[in-house]
Length: 152
Length: 250
Image (cartoon, rainbow over all chains, first blue to last red; front, side, top):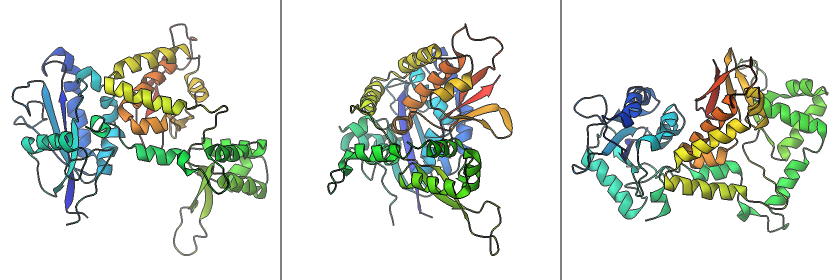
């Protein structure tokens, strides 16, 4: 058992305000898909806003009301991959362009945190910035280029 | 910025490559044989109709099968089936697993049985050489970068509907999905094979979305479909070692 867990962040720009009709289906999917995450093998934690249900009121960039952030912690890259790409989450993921605009820069980052650590929004956004600036590395990486957990 | 940064949703191309077999750089310098010779050798093993029948039986089975079951299905002796099955393993078309069929374990449980299942490796042969897989990968990356998921899904649904026949399960079988009824639930059909496997591993959101739309089209067809035929709906139901789409009767 490693003393490290995998943190994941992704940011996404919604095509219209979160409470509008364009995003209604996305918002309706959230409770079930978040519940699925929590019940998935290897799930540790997910970031929620003050409402406590999801992270849809968090804004990583105060000047950008359409930029959402999603952050969670898992036991390994494999368990996260199984949830993202091999569960019912995949069904929702295939509808991403109905709700989110395509970002040209990196919008997702993975990194290792000591078990028990809970990332903040600022910390998560910093990892995306690291990936954009330096490419995939031990401090911020991608599914395509996973880095092993620190050994100490 | 590197390409990897631009496409973090490309999940694990190395895994897809592993499963698809080695690349052309693995051509054997000693013999001068390349991947085309390897593919010819593998596919040549299927020239024998008995062996081809055994291969199809094993490939279509929901789980690994033993020599007895394969021999019975092919109508040949157990020893002849064993010979052909082992030739198919040598050719890289099947692989073996050892498992106790009885469910017993510990002393007295007997030796584990040798079971056969289709090898994960892909064999592609095109004469003259064609590289539609490379074209597919390039097109997928371009579509991904441009964010054209919905346009791709629309094309897939349209083309699928054009190729639909009266029987949804037959249509999917003809398209290589290898459908089978879920054990204990005749209202669910699962698809043992993903025709887009390597591409789906690399671009899961894009390609699985395309595939779902294609299957929706193949299953629904156009309005002039035969009356009275079974009606199925396609749904995303990902699981290990199979297509992410399943059919449900309605």
